[in-house]
Image 1 (spheres, rainbow, N blue to C red):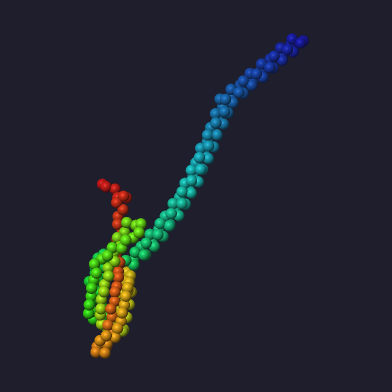
Image 2 (tube, rainbow, N blue to C red):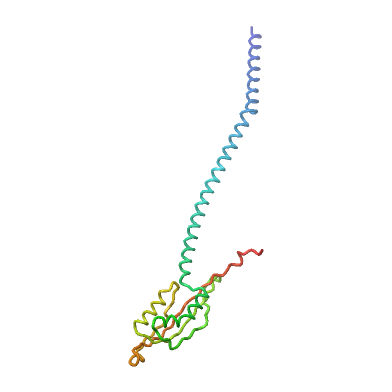
Length: 199
């Protein structure tokens, strides 16, 4: 009786051992690779999520920087309007006598100074030059105001550095004598040769 029981017990132990070995083998063959695949898939998914978050952050930062660049460009273009192009400056200076006469003023003296470069600190990408005009003319008060208004009403800025109106010759002609010093500025943005590729 005991031998049958011990045989039955051995069979059960053997069956349990075979079953356990089979389970371990099945786990290693089927379940373990799936678990590793799921872990790898989760890691891949996490990596993709992290990259998407980084991409969205970089896109947002890029949009913000582009917006700031657009604002700076717009402001620069607006500020640039105050300056003359070189050809515009030459045209303005050669036509200033005609402009004065159109406004009823008679030029008695006109002196154009050669352009003087203005040093812009820490910026070698722009050329800034100052052109100065010293002129004397005769005109009625209304004509002088009209001429000055015409100068000041240009898109580019015309600076009045000095002005002196006197009654000289007023008794004889009814005109005022006006001495004025004007300045205009030209701006040229130089190409940055570091960013230009030689072809």
